[in-house]
Image (cartoon, rainbow, N blue to C red; front, side):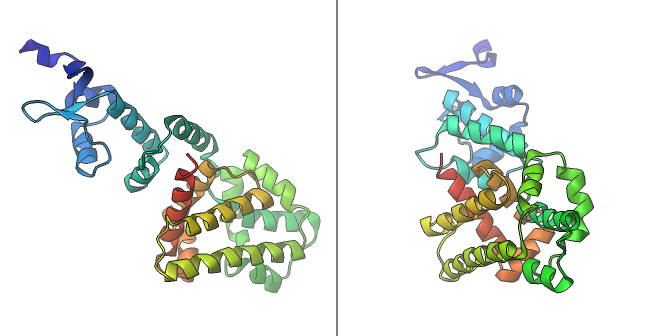
Length: 266
């Protein structure tokens, strides 16, 4: 009977661990592991004769992925999407997580880009009138958030690169950017209204267009950074409201499309 207390039991030809052992190894609660099992996020690969959960090496690897994504504040339902499918690539996932950890501070495209425009308008002396500003920005006033953005992202490479690029943009450039953005938005709304799911290739292609637009206009935007931006779209009420004005449920729909697009790159 004492053998049941040892770590690394044998089940068939594979070493396994009980739920309490895994909880100690990973620094999580048994209750958390039970919850992951109940929602299908981490189902143990075996059961003992008495029906107790037994976790094998693949289970531990998956738990590591889950906990890394949780450190990045990714919701459980989104982690399930990222880890789903038979084509999941662990190395690619680790590389994605590494990028996300390095770029976590620069998680917002809309706020950063908008304030950069206002800052550079001041620096270059090419100032927009209020009418021009709201024509380009809509009802979002970037000057209201300038101090916040500089404090949070002023030292990041993304902020510096965006400032460098946008310093030379004219009103015509911003109007072209706005037209591109509106086209992506209208195309997305059309698919959403037609009942096309967010993980449909057509919607994911639009998410990829949006990522490349950021990459072209502002700063290098990897899929990992785009996922971080997507999390901001539903975590920050200001950004959520922007998308919800387009369509009710748009923020979540667009967020899910970005995550699905990132997942298919693995």
